Length: 308
Image (cartoon, rainbow, N blue to C red; front, side, top):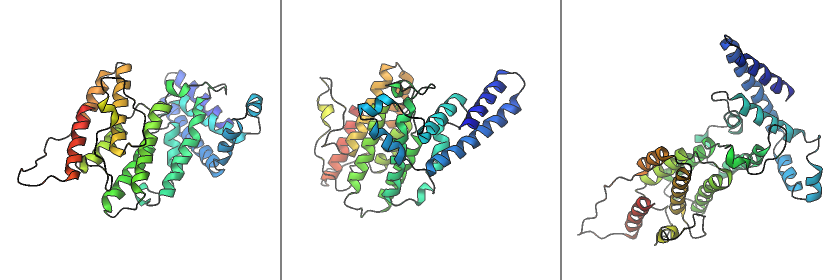
């Protein structure tokens, strides 16, 4: 950790002087390598100690004493997070370096949900550490002001799950529940962790559903639009509800992102997102043929997306 801090200081000094572009580039590369080694060493220790610390901090007596000096792992994680945030190296953010160490195999080779769950577990274990400032003090709510986005990893996992769905028409009984859980996690990351740079992951959801003609997942029985679209005369809730299916949660992600962009007066992102999500108007239902329930639900989803 000390070497990483010293390298950051040298990098800052090189950047402050003119004519040291080559040295700056070399120090950026060195800092990425050192941070990568530190992150690998921390991951090799496992994240159970971090989770136990979170549990211990739920007790007031433990929390009042503060995090003690023997908690080397959490100190190492916070230092490398703050160093890479301060360094602002292109393609060298904390998550850029950490993801490369977390994903030990090619994502296209993963077929076991337990491997994906380990990645989700690791990412969520590290998230709370982003609320420490450079003095080691927790700033409550910092995650909403200073985003700690890492959509790249969930997006890769989502694409793999959707690919497996498309490859195998005979899916396992719990597959839809798993899909719903990971879509709900994306909702949680936006609302609770301030991950609002979400156009890419929303586009991933749309591309998948568009490839399925905006149908619900196989074996999902849905006969209504999501409740929030029926309450637009009020201030509808965009929280995930027990009856929500995957497509309905996707619609809530769209609605949440549009609301956020409106709040920060980012009309350009609203226009780009809406243009990205406009469905093709290529549906035909010949009157001499019967309309199946799945087709009707698909048409309703088309309409609900436009309404959203």
